[in-house]
Image (cartoon, rainbow, N blue to C red):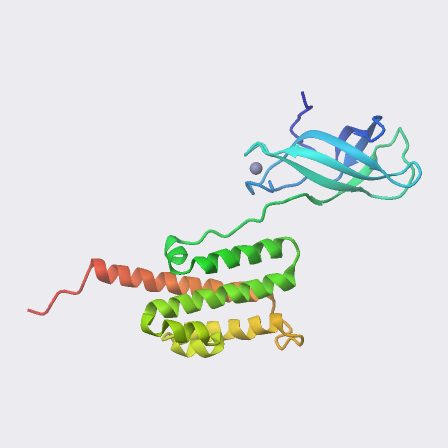
Length: 243
Ligand SMILES: [Zn+2]
């Protein structure tokens, strides 16, 4: 039976075992606040922990297994000893939270209309999010730029199916002249500039980053949603024919 208790106060004092099977008391400054699986805000339950030895008699790191009280899944958080001092039996060593292993990326949910329009957009966007949440910002930027290209091109192909082959083979920067709405064309144009910067060696837009690219993709999605809703309304409530 694993020992389990709801932590209410920090720091948390734990008795955990070392690789040599001796028990030690350690003190955690922080516990993970979000479940890596269900992404709920949680106070995790402690299940088990193991310290790994450092040089001499110092403790260098600890792996702590927690359980999420919401989805009940187990996850391992990595801790590092706060300083390199020798471990005294009387004073619990302080450990700092370094990260959670195998955290699942939190992926944005898209409306069915977007998934219908461009399944590739959703897939690439989710891969970019996974890269971003694992700290791979350079790759994330390229991913968001590619996702945007699929979204815009699939939209343009839906609007002009007879030009599908031309649209597929044309650079995004040239396709956007086909966008009828001035504001959305201006937003996508900026995303094209930004996206190109993610791929190029010299950044022209020094102050803008991945979050700006995501913001512009958000504007495009909002625009598509608004357009779909307008079309739906007109289909459902067509203007009466003049008598
Ligand atoms: Zn959970």
